[in-house]
Each structure stands twice: as structure tokens, then as C-alpha cells.
Image (cartoon, rainbow, N blue to C red):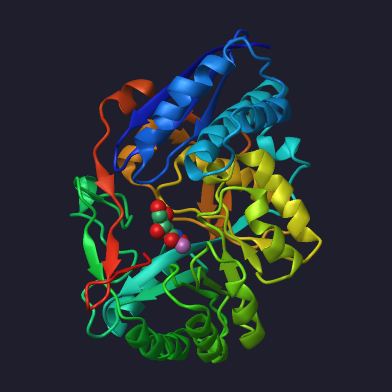
Length: 408
Ligand code: EZ4
Ligand code: CO
């Protein structure tokens, strides 16, 4: 079965998405997600100019060989642009293989290891009553695990909440905003470290000991600050503390680990299996935050999780709205199949996005399931996608009180 066309589709229903659609000479089509938040068009060029011409005429059945060919023949390995492009090809070929076999992709990966994927949603508030309302709203939607983000007294912004406007015009729940320049936010780590334990104490008091609670530190702490935070949150029994230090310096996790038993999750901006090598082998983390889309696709996600299984490290794949419904489906199939699944992040896409991407997954009683259609179970309505051209949009960035740029 040969690849005859590969189209790159850019659409912005509630936010920007880049999708690769591969078609074979047998008329089968496959979709892959190549969305890189704030740098979307770089991946579009990488695909259109450098990858699509290499795909035409290739054997669509050879997923691993195509992955290795794209990774090694480019010479310049790794990096988010390269790996998002390779991810899209990998996902699209798994989608095609599933359709050819008339099986959902999770069946090709070994079949289901569980009935559904426990998902967590994002609650936040500037005050405790607002935060409690947000947690209750998520529980009413079915979520049984909750990420808690909060305002810090003296700071104007809460990380992760910069959605523009409301309803159909909003920017799909994400901190990115439309506009040609990133929005500026403020930050004070000492104020955050003082305030956060008081918030978790109040949440535990209100919601009891059972509810799994997560928190994202978004790379903002030094190792010793992260160690201090992990320690001060121990009484509130977090499911995980995410991205406590910047991801570039993996040795930092050694210090954090020596000081706290709060479980650690890291890796949403990692793009290869090798980024996790030391962290898994030294058992410095508990959860792998990789996303199918930024990590080279389904094939490497499966490999890193099989490696992690030897060390009792579990999955916690990155599932914000900048992962398209195609990328989300890809990691749901992996999560259902692997034994060492942990939790799946699930932020819901907007109505326009769901009209562009027709999906077969279900979310019931807090559990996701990718559905049983052959392949990934997602189709793209090209006419609907064409109604929403690319819009320039960026994630915000941070400055400290003295004007220094800080990690975001
Ligand atoms: O800021 O996906 O855990 N989730 C996150 C996300 C990231 C965005 C960046 O594109 O940290 O909200
Ligand atoms: Co995160």
C-alpha cells in the first residue's frame, strides 16, 4: 500500500491546529497531529517543504522504518519542530494501519489493559470560594481527579487562565492568546511558596482526603524551592507535582527527590525518549508527561512507557487543548493498551473544534475511552476546517517585579 498524497491542513476553529492527512493508493486515509503552540507555521513548513515530498510513493505499512528514516536521514535530530512533524506522520500511519486491519489502534498495540482512562481536569480560582466552585463544576462534569491552580495574593495573573472572551469566541481554554505579541504576566516565587500550601489545606478540608489533586509548577522554581514546596505539600497527599523545575536541567530532580515524597511528573516539553532516560533509570520521577504530538508520535510513546514500566513509572500524558483531537486520540489508544497507565489530562475542546474533528471517544464518570472505530477514530471535515484560517497567537510570558524575564 503506497502513500499517494499527504496534505497539511491548518485550521483555527477555537485555536490553531496543524493536521497531516495521508492518503494511500487503496483509498485509505490517516490523520496526524503536528500542532506546536505558538510555533505552528514552522511545523507546517517542515512538513510541506521537507517531509511530504519524501512520503509520496513510500510503503504506508512501514511505520517504524518511516519513523527511523525521517529521524535519521534529516541528520539534525530532535527538537519540537522536527518531532511534531515526525509525530504527525507516525500517527497518520497508525491510523491507516488500524483502518486496513479494521481495528482500533489500541488493539494493534496489544489490546485494552483497562476499561477506561482516569482523566483529570483543570480547576482554578483567584479566591478560595471561586476555586471551590470550579472544582465542583468539574466534579459535575464527571471529573474524579482535579488539577488545582490558584491566584497568589499580590499577583495579577494565575498561571494557565488567560482565555479570551467567552462562548464561541474564546481561545479554547488555553493560556495562549490571539495577538502578535505574547501577553506579559507577573510572578513572585516566594509569595507562591507561602500561599500554595494554605490553598491545598483548604481544598483538602472542603473536599476530603479521597479526591486526587494535582498541581503544575510550570518550571518556575529552583531545585531547592521545588524541594521546599514538595515537602510543604506532603500533608495534602498530592497525586503529583508537575514541572517543578525547568526541564532542561534533569539533574535538578535529584535534589528535589532527596527531600520530598510528593510524586513528581515531568516532560510535557520533552521531545524524545532520550530526554527521559536518566529520569526513569534513576527513578527521579513518577509520571511521564510526554504528549504523542510533541514526542514523535505513538511509536516512541509506547517505547518510553515500556522502558518506564521496569521502574514502576507511569503515564500522565499531556492533554491540553493545544493537543488536537487527533493527538488526544493517539495517546488515549496508547494509554488504554499499556499496563503502566497513570492518568490522562483532559481539557475539553470547544464546539467549533469538535465540528472540524469528528471524534468517537467517550468521557463518562471520569473515564475516557477512545472508542472502537478502526484506526484512531477521528475524521477531519476539510470544508469545516477551511472556514477557520490561521490566527496569530502566543503563550504569555513572565517578568519578576524588577523586570527580569522568568520561566513561564
Ligand atoms: O501550558 O499546553 O499541563 N499543562 C500545561 C499546558 C501548557 C500548554 C503549552 O502549550 O502546562 O497548559
Ligand atoms: Co503542565
